[in-house]
Amino acid sequence: MTATLDRLAAIVASRRAADPQASYVAKLFVKGRAKIAQKVGEEAVEAVIAAMQDDREGLIGESADLLFHLSVLWADAGITPDDIDAELARREGVSGIAEKAARKTATPGD
Ligand SMILES: N=c1c2ncn([C@@H]3O[C@H](COP(=O)(O)OP(=O)(O)OP(=O)(O)O)[C@@H](O)[C@H]3O)c2ncn1[C@@H]1O[C@H](COP(=O)(O)O)[C@@H](O)[C@H]1O
Image 1 (cartoon, rainbow, N blue to C red):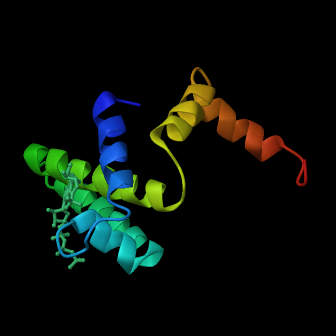
Image 2: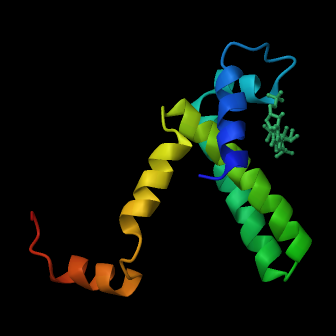
Image 3: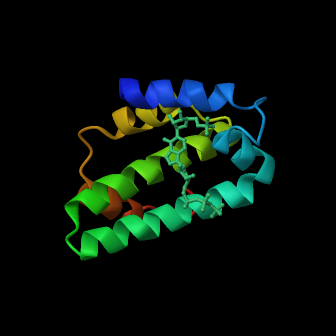
């Protein structure tokens, strides 16, 4: 993953024991998985709206909000950026079209 996302993950992890009055991340951890997931959904919708409005700066800002909240969700679920990196690397070179076609022809239960 990028160095910035790795640094963000380290900061987020360090906020587990922080004071929720002083740390937004600690506050999210206290609120729990459902609230964190809700924020990810909100930021995703805001990114979509910015894209549909052709708002480049808005899309950059909302994308950063989305990645930040996704980083908190990963941390809450015990996932690291390296886990996502490994999954993306596993998919490298596999066409989305070919992958979907293989899923459709696969026998259920395989
Ligand atoms: N990247 C971010 C980041 N991006 C966005 N935000 C915050 O995310 C919140 C999202 O805004 P909203 O208006 O949706 O939130 P809200 O109205 O407070 O939320 P709700 O009322 O819906 O719960 C804002 O408070 C932003 O400041 C962030 N807060 C923190 N970080 C990073 O996380 C680090 C640790 O932050 P603290 O835990 O606050 O020290 C920081 O040093 C940054 O690197």
